Image 1 (cartoon, one colour):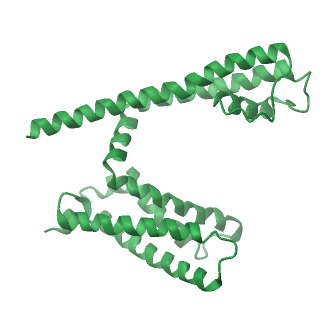
Image 2 (cartoon, rainbow, N blue to C red; image 1 turned 180 degrees about the horizontal axis):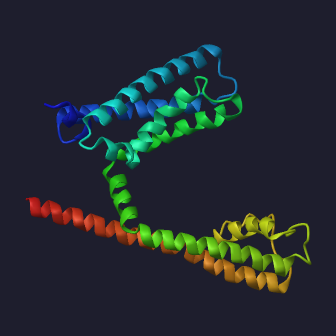
Length: 240
């Protein structure tokens, strides 16, 4: 059996064993990353975690090199979603060896949590979700742009309704963006709220818009997921 079949295919026993080994180390990496944040962790345990981190990075580096070396199109894999995820899973470790200053070291280390995205490669439901996002990407991008426009208009509207009555809560349109975000997402933290009649009526309209912002993308993805699932079932039935 070719090495490429073991690395890139999951329909063989060696391929499944390879996948499960990688999954196991991803889980171990996530657990060690979480334990490393404990404030009173003994130095001995922290040293063990650092050793585990080095060991896992070496394995992930070998995995990445194997995937690049055995990929039918190396350029296509490197710039693919999973190729970028595989690179981001290891690059923070090498950057933390001395190529970045201490002020950005913490941010670089946090990027390690992106290793959890590697699990998506081994989950058929996640792959199906990725296909659905790709299928509905134009509609999602369009709706995202409309959401940003509505967010800005909401901040402008509440500023002109409430600025005179609450100059401390709504000092500018930029500050009003926090209220617009909390209201459009229907979170409603309650730390900033309108007190004028016009502001309350405007808030009601924005809340109605917020319900659509949550519902419309969900509907788009649900429809796309249904189509992807039907396509998979049709291809399986054609194969049999």
